[in-house]
Image (cartoon, rainbow, N blue to C red):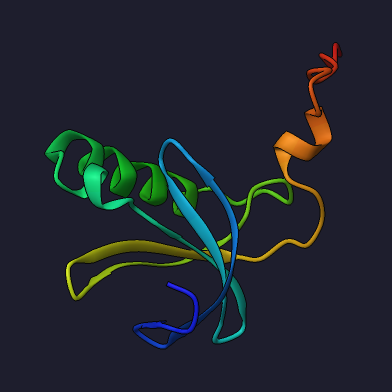
Length: 104
């Protein structure tokens, strides 16, 4: 995907990968673009969940939740364009020790 364009988002580099998709840093403004892996796109339930998750996140407004700019399909590729937040990944933060539970 690096070097390709999804709509007006130019893919610059891969940021990470998980069970729900691959996340890339892209440029229109600095954004993160999450795309579904090909094997997931073939599964209608996973595709629906991908879109529903994006719509749910886009409806929320909180400083600890990324802003979703775009949910689209271009040339058969489903993707979510969201705010790019520099820093460490959750895997890097947890690094085998897990996360502390915060009790209020």
